[in-house]
Length: 216
Image 1 (cartoon, rainbow, N blue to C red):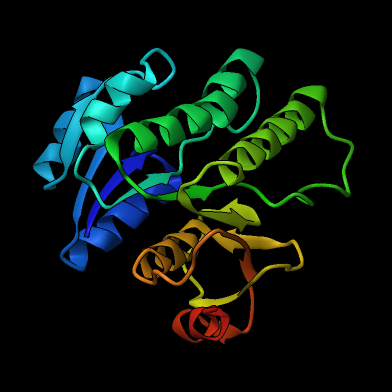
Image 2 (cartoon, rainbow, N blue to C red; image 1 turned 30 degrees about the vertical axis):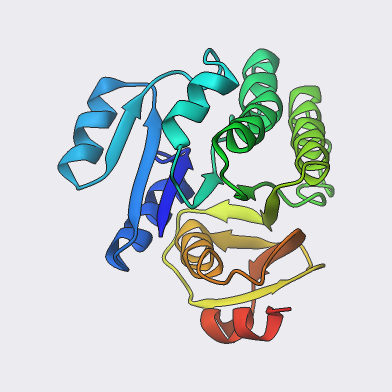
């Protein structure tokens, strides 16, 4: 499989890229900083240097031509609203349009859990971030692409537990980025996950068993 990752230097994106490459998949991606490109290239990835926010859909389409799937793990994590708009909302729409232009049918978006932090009073910028994520999801579902949206709960940098809960609706808690990457690696190889939304949390079931039970 030939995978193009937007967000390949991120917490989930890099781990998923490593997992895919270990399976023999080809992995490429877009980075803003040349030093990140050099590091990734040294590890065997094909890398393009560019600014997702500044490039056009046509420019991005020229980079993704011929790949099997686009994986979008890029995110701003809230804060500056211009960055949130550019990466969390408009970037998804731009990447989806690039996929259409390049003839790439499959598009996997790593989004956020809608109930994340609902027990807290969130700052306005974080509420704006969640709204932008939702707008991106809606825009993607209205395309003709073979899309899949994965909504992990609160991300942690702890070690993988190897046990998850995954399905169309799950309780919100937390989950290791390593577990999210493991799930992402597996569902990319399961084409029957198509045009649906999956929520992901820590759970009691081994990753492969949980995913197998969830296959349509």
